Amino acid sequence: MQTPGLIIIAILLMILLNVLMVVATISVKALRSYERRRVQNLREQLEPPLYDYLVTGEVAPDLRQVKGRDLTILTNMVIELLGALRGSEAGKMVELAGELGLVERDLARIDSRGRWRRAKAAENLGYYGGPDAAAPVGGLLQENDETVRAVAARALSRIGTREAAESLTHFLGSDSELTRLRMAENLERIGPLAVGRLVELVESEEENKRRAQVLAARILGNLRVADARAALRDSIQRHWNTDLRAQATQALGKIGDPDDLPVIVEAAGDSSWPVRVQAANALGMIGEVSTVPALEYLATDEEWWVRLNAGRALVNIGPEGEKALVRILDNPDRFARDRAAATLESYGVVRRLAEELAEDTDESEYAAGVIRSLVRAGATRHLEQLSRSLPKAKERQALGELLAEARAEAKAEPDDA
Image (tube, rainbow, N blue to C red; front, side, top):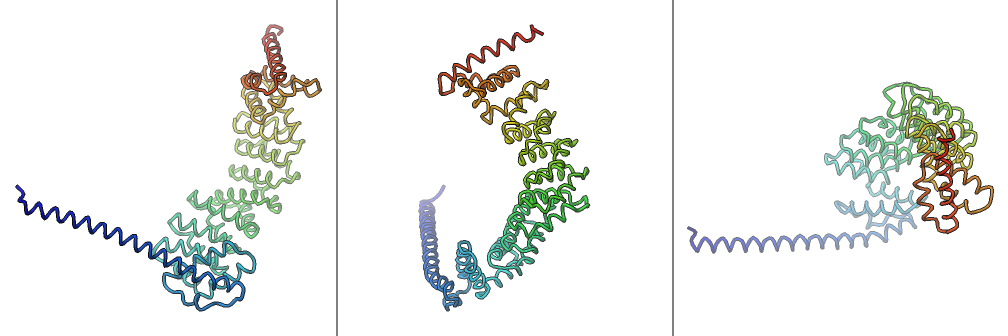
């Protein structure tokens, strides 16, 4: 049984602990508040000499005297300014970072044991490290830590030199998919300086570079590199790399040179459906009416994904592509008919035609023919919705009457046969 003395001691200890917790909480808040005020005061002290430097080019003593952890605050201010400045003013700020020892400081921290220190050093050098920082920052791409690699890749894209592009390209075939995608993203940011190495990669005959080649072809397409067309056309013939053939075909579509159409049309007959998908996309991007027959054929492909993209491409081409989709409504393949009808509906073609029914024009006769084809194909649900939702009464009435008539004709066809 506890004595009253022990109970009193326990109560006093609890009170003491609560008091200590309150004191500790207040102390932490006070320290944080003090630090915020100190940082704010330091920023207010450093802002004038930073702006004066941009005008005069002279480094004020206040900037040279910043030491220790306050260098982090100065570094952040320099980077903020670099994010807003362009041209010669940004160049001046980079020179200032070197003169104040910020570059040297971050180059030393690249080898820090702490991963966050390494990542932060790489990020800073991306802003003001210049060409000489490309090699040490590029070394971080070998890190096991995904975050450090990501920060280093972004920093290299900011440095934007051929050496930076070379480092990123080297890791374009990494075992990590996330790393590969980050390398590709930052190579696109570098742009023209990366093109030469990317073309060499696409042209390579080494099978261990398959993954890197696919991304290289994609980047060249996204950058619309006309000089890469020959390499891309050649890569479509490499039957051992389906993904490369598909990506190179799409890249040619993005570049958009009509002279590449024969190669793309040939790819439309590839034995691998991913290549046929990208051939459909490429033909739609270029938009030449002469390719409608090839797209019409792809729109009846056995693979749903090929039919989907071929239908989209036909709509993008315009009236001739639309007519091809209408012809497919009478195709013996039910899946091809359904996909053609869905494409016409999703792109607003069916609605437009339904609205034209109420007008006594050549367009209304064409519209009536398309709607009859839709009924024969069994695609009536969207038409029924339109017959109730079109804004004008005469449009609803015209569509309703035609639907009834077309249904009657569709029912009579088997008997007539």
